Length: 101
Image (cartoon, rainbow, N blue to C red; front, side, top):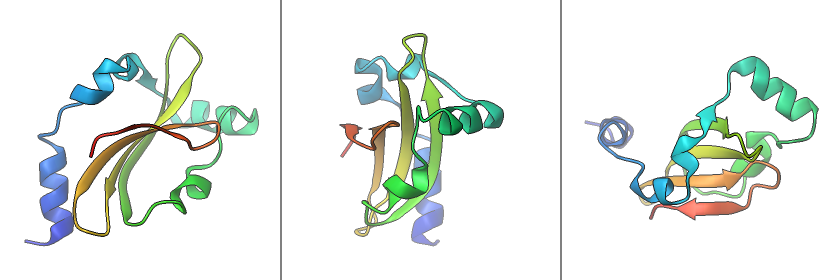
């Protein structure tokens, strides 16, 4: 079984425990049209700009927001050591808000 496949299987069993403490699990992920609008309006930077900062492969990413207006990227990263990381990034500047190492 490849590392990537094993990581994806693992992802299906991971919970958002640490993220819930931040209230981020209450944020609904945006539909493609809403993502485009957030990018056009400058409320979020493109994930490709942020992704350059990380070693490894982003296997899943979603732009999510809540009633508070804050947008975050929920990212699942397969890092260069083969570890799966769940991270939350401030969508405005890519700052790591939560790292589930």
